[in-house]
Image 1 (cartoon, rainbow, N blue to C red):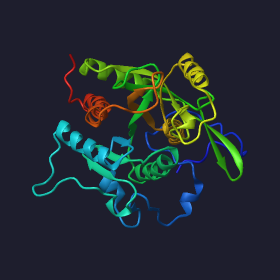
Image 2 (image 1 turned 120 degrees about the horizontal axis):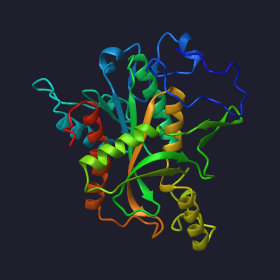
Image 3 (image 1 turned 90 degrees about the vertical axis):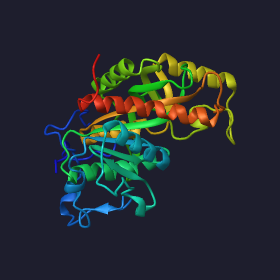
Image 4 (image 1 turned 90 degrees about the horizontal axis):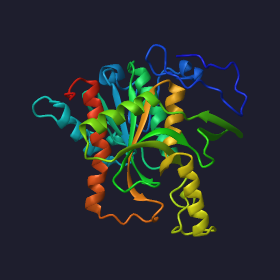
Length: 322
């Protein structure tokens, strides 16, 4: 386990380098884990004392995560079809975390498909345990991709956004956390090369989609934090909302969701490559409510999945380049 890059924690700002792990393995910066005889990954329903994690997950190259259990089961079945994965006769993929009653987790060849719930706190719990799982399984050079939904800022519904930056409500590429009564800030810079490659593959092989890149605003809630006018409480005017949305656009923000800074920060801390690919359900400059028919929403949700699977197939040499 890698020693922390700082001798002491000052309790205010952790100046961690936003770079990849030197040996390709997940970088866990927690010396206390060395003193544990076993580690129970409670929310995943697996542990070092009950499962052979290296045997089960050692070949994982991609960890794809999204909000709901249903969406990630659908994604896992789509991966199985597109990668031509065959299971032994009489068997099928199953939810490895079903007994935890928290998240779902499916393994399809080199792809792990997991749900992370809604918002940064839920994603944080999932990602802590996924990163430890990858470490214990001795996975090399894993790529983590969040596949989700979002609100667009000046882009039409159904657009696929590949994030090239994750900012908080103050337009800063950092995550603010409160730990032991102190304020801690962590880097949320995104992997530009990975974002560019996903965009390139998507545009080449899915030319009918509107695929864009830009910064993603991460908020702490769905209503006031995103400047909506339709929540239970609202103490600002529509003009104030529109002024804020124009500020976002001027900073290169093209969509809004609730997980990106947490995701980017933890990928940086662990030294792993991470990307965020989301579809937009609404253009927030034209309204707040999602009025798109459910059937259309379901079709929209498939779009980032198709982009991500095209990227995975490209990496695995299963996609014919034209």
